[in-house]
Length: 165
Image 1 (tube, rainbow, N blue to C red):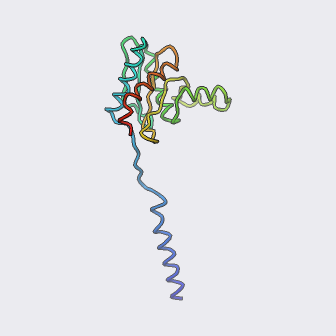
Image 2 (cartoon, rainbow, N blue to C red):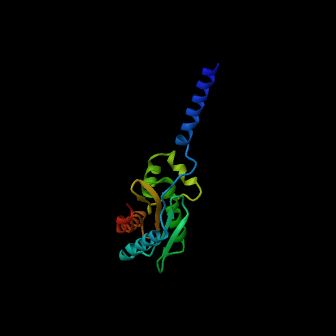
Image 3 (cartoon, helix red, strand yellow):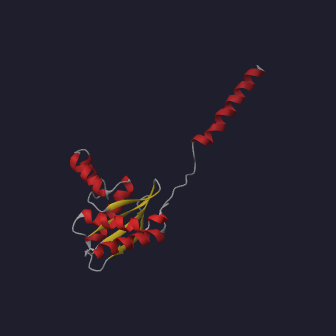
């Protein structure tokens, strides 16, 4: 009987000893800082201004919370909501909104994404990555075409790429 009790005790210790390694109670996640978010928002607005476009750029963190907004002089009032929703969509899906829009046009099931509150499937939302981690996203609205909004977002991210390692 003592050997059986000892064996059961050892089995229980071994089982409970591995539990913390399998289930992590607290996670560490990387996210965008206010300073970097401000740099990217300003960079996107500047890139579009260089092309003659008055836009708004919104940068969100990895969970879609707003970190920075820059609105160019003469940017339309609709650009605030558009840039926010593009950033939110990109951060949520970890993809560009242009790629998502093109996917939804080809796949009728994906077209239902437009029914998710806050999702906007127009070009101009780009995830911000540090290595393989999506730490946020930038959304740009106001250029005459989503592909141009995306170019401004990409230019802003490219400008700070050394900080994204």
